Image (cartoon, rainbow, N blue to C red; front, side):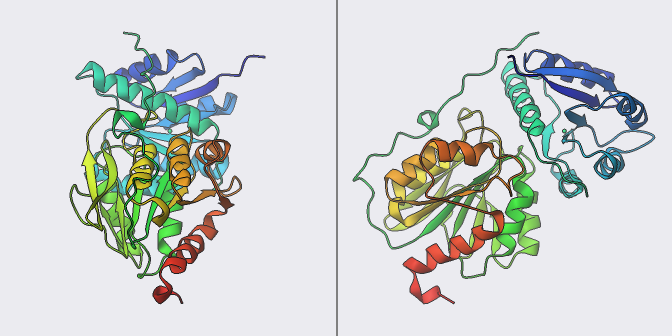
Length: 363
């Protein structure tokens, strides 16, 4: 029996943007654009007749702004909403407000300046729609071929057993996607200042990760920043991979440092969790803890198995607390997960593991 298509409602005041989104989504046989609407009032009338699986919503519109419409949707008929906006870093606080209001993802408006830019944007949008269709939403987004799905081999060679040099420093690597911004907020807020260093890949467009890190830094006991190439990795700090670039763990002598690299998307993402996890397997081995959290797809599943094979501890967020159980489920299916825990257990798991290797920080 063929799988039902994901039905989408596009809400944007620009006729050209609506047409571009319609064209991109219609090229995917698993997606059907149910309708388009020029503003929230037109969309509301359509919603009276039938409900879509996913809404793609602009924020800046006349008559009623997208944020107001988003709150009305979540209060009346919670539906997965993807924010598709041209807002850049200056408007990123609005984006985080949208997440808090119930949006499940954000994607930048398609850029058609180059074929590669359009291809990557198109792939990201289609994946976001299919991911959102599976999200758990609670009350309170010329024909191009789908790009080849690359593995971490495109960025970093596979780890070699027995080649990890000893070190006493412990490090945590975390991967998340759909639902991850709020989930990471919950985890990092609970960590004490004496926590281990954390390297985090959250699937997010370029231009938003610096603001995301700044927002977290303002509410957490630990320090949080967007990662920079070549900077040292320190306890009590969390480093967020910059959007549209890969983040790797490296080691100089016995000390860790961060490498930021360009390159093709891996597992259809850049930054990729698989790339981070593989680098942790290579350079930290048994002194690493890998955590895979809510998100769609399988990014991180192969890298987590590589970490486990080289002695790392591994954890996955459970289905009940995940917005989308795709990434944790795939990591479990690949055999890379030692233990499945709820979202609110993750901070405790991190500290118990860290204290086991550093008794002086216990308590």
